[in-house]
Length: 316
Image (cartoon, rainbow, N blue to C red; front, side, top):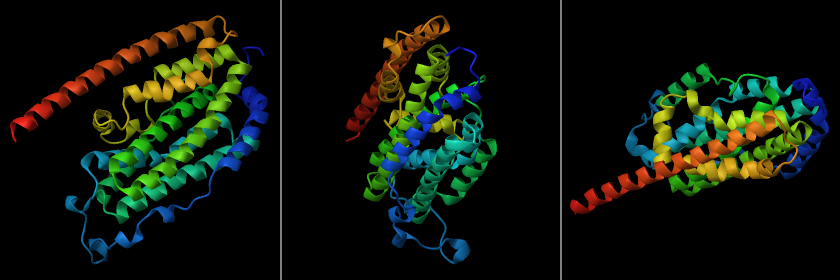
């Protein structure tokens, strides 16, 4: 294929692949109901209905688990923004529109079940949660990188879905509560199937136009930001989650980025030239830099943990 393919051309060329992957997804996806993952017997009225409002002592979760749950939920809440971006990149015609609709419906369940769980169990302050939801959804999300959108969008959502899966699974573990863990495992399984769809579309795009797709992948990897970036206090909360192993640079590099690049056979491809080869070189250098940053963060985290342990031992 030539390098002059437009997004419309790419969508047309990849439509048979998308149809096959959609059918595979529908065969593998498990139907589930949000209400089956919520302990409704724990629920009670708030003050407006004659009960009592939330206070911190009602939560059974640690501060880290609450931070992770709220961060993950607010990320899921911004679905209208994601739907708009992905529909503009993918189109709503034919199989692409079917996928966008199905993906949106499946993602919506995640916000439904997480909010129901958090409110029913009084795990977090529902007033602050609603204020944060309003602020985050009003801001929305910006396109990850400017320029032709399809190749960049599909590369981004591949990484984002896998990153979200890791965050949900680790949050479930941090909750140390069996219902929350089961719920987040169910959500993570959905995210994994979504990642597989996008990863395989990207793989097909690499075969179709390797140089342009590798450039798009490099642009996304080197500028990657989590989709919750615009939510209130995100950067501060992200540091907390990184410090406690919910999602950190090492996980991003070793559990998300590198496995995806291996699946795409990025560093073994022999069909690259010109800008494609330059993009791969840039990507390789970036991964080395990211590995160094991850190591420095881990060393700093270990030093802080050691000092805290020493202080704790001194007070006994």
